Length: 525
Image (spheres, one colour):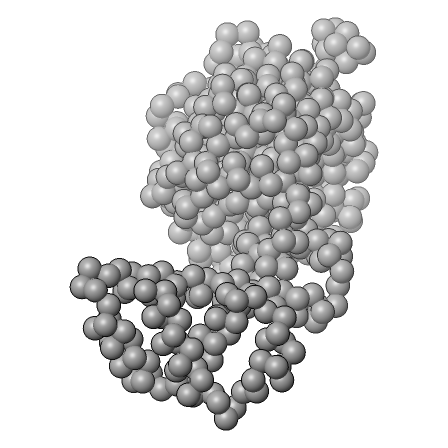
């Protein structure tokens, strides 16, 4: 049968290309080919024939073959093999061409690829085999950003990316983030203009995040960070940044195991995870001694009161390099907040927005002593129990020369500040707030204050260029509508906990007017 096919192909080839092709003795290329290569060369020469001619020739060949012949299957197989071989050769030639046309050597190409975001890197990898080879280098996966607006990244994708990065992994971002233009909680520490101040305070809405989170659930499970512990803990050993957003299935044990594999962590950001504050801070304290930035936002505002004083002490002792601390939406009491702010001697950035129990007395005598005196940014936005008198005392302390490095202060509250006697009574009295005097004394400071009025909401924003109070109703149309949602959330929180905000035993009566002896002993360690 093979002789019949060979004879048919040779005869057709001779008749169709006799005038076009020289004989083998006159073609040095053909003389060097093997028998199979000569046959393939002759077979490929049939591509010049009309399609109808090939159909007729193949049909006659079928008629001359036995009825049980597998000639059709063999033809299909041969066609598939030829197609694969042609595609492979085409990719190889294209890669060689790209290697000559691409101006950068492989090491510089890898360097460029390492600067791309993860999605762009995947696109580049699919462009050609040369880029695909360069994109497989671990350095290209040093900074993995697998965050999405909708859940579509699963554990397998995370594991593959972390495995590709190996010991080169330095940054990892996972989860579902709201469709905001800036990262969550990223309030730039140096805000100099009224326009920038307004954008920052109104760009992120707690309730927007909550409502979006309610419509979407991440397909990542609690095991999504397990690859950090794989290969003897190599991937997590040198990880510097870990940001996790709205991974609803994450639990305390899994997060703790991941942090134990990241001893070099400098930046930890957690938003919308159902993990306990105390357990998380204990894991950070036990494993992340080099950490410099901690941002933790609660998934359930005002309900997590698990933090204990001993946990605060351990965190301060074990993480002395912390310069930025954000604990948002937790039920924090002033005595514990004071331990944290006063204990971290390098602290420059503090954000306790939407914290439920803070009254503000933790600020007393804070800016004039070691610990707290280096603060550059202090954000106490929408703290339900923040008292009007404590804010006034803070401004008076600034006038007296405390908080010398403070350049950004946010003391806004959409429902007003709490009165001294009853936190249910919301108030704001500009006569006891020495705002103008502070701005005259500290022209470098940006002061943001937003309080409700009888007619609705208005914003008073102060900075170095403005020494008078300014009402901006026109710029708060969207902000006011959002405030109505926030008020319903706040009212439900009020009804769920009708105490003064410092209800848990000893902490309820812990009012700091001066440094206690226990604090002095602890801070001298």
